[in-house]
Length: 64
Image (cartoon, rainbow, N blue to C red; front, side, top):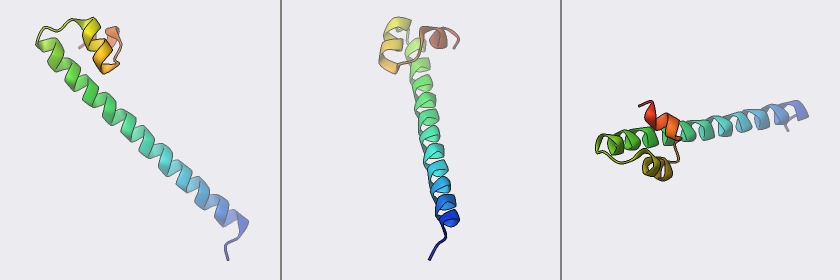
């Protein structure tokens, strides 16, 4: 039988793991959006449309 401290530790590890996974997913989605936006911009699409479709800010797109 686990002690309360072991249970707490396991819960904290699980929570940290889930947080890390969510952060990784967000970073991956952002990288993908930046790649797509770069292609759109290279094709001459206007920054307002790129921003709307990728959810990146206009400043982010202009800095590419």
